[in-house]
Image (spheres, rainbow, N blue to C red):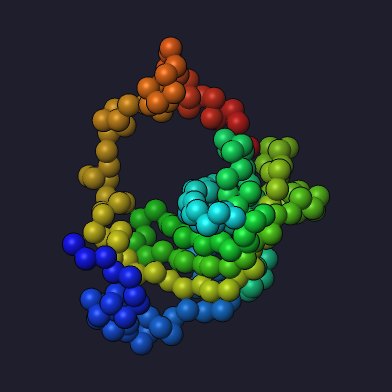
Length: 202
C-alpha cells in the first residue's frame, strides 16, 4: 500500500475532470438551487473546529425548513437537539460550512459551501416559530459555492429503494447501545425514546 501525499500523485490516478463539472459551480443560487432547497427536508452540515477536526451533523424538518433569504444567503433554524453544540461551537471558531441537501426519492443532491454566522434576532427567530416555540438560534449562511452533485452515490447505494430498507429490529435500540457504551444499568426502550423525542421536536 502506498500513501498518496501530493496532488499530482492523486490526479494521476483519475481521469481529467469534465469541463461541465468545472463550470457547474455557481457563486449564488439560481432558480434550480432555490427549488431544490424548497423541496428538501434534510441537509447534512459539515463544520470544522479550532483544532481542525471535522464534524458532520444532520438537520431536518418539513420541506423548505431552510429558507432562501436571497440569491446569496440561506437561513437555517437550530431546532432542539442533544445540546452538545458541536456545530455551533465550531462555527464560532471557524465560520466555514458545507451543506448537502437531499430529497427522498431523488438521487441528485445539492452542495453548498459558504460561511455561517449564528443569529438570535427576535424577528429571525419569529420567522421559524412552530406551535409557539422558536429556535434558540438561526444560522445565516453566506453562499460562496452552489452546485448540483451527480446521482452515482445514491444510485449505487439504492438508499431510497424500499426493498433495501433495513428492518429497525436488525439493530439494537439507541437505548441499548447507550446502555452498553456507557455502562448503564437499564436501557430506554425504542418506544420510550421516540415518545420523548416527539415531545421535544420543537
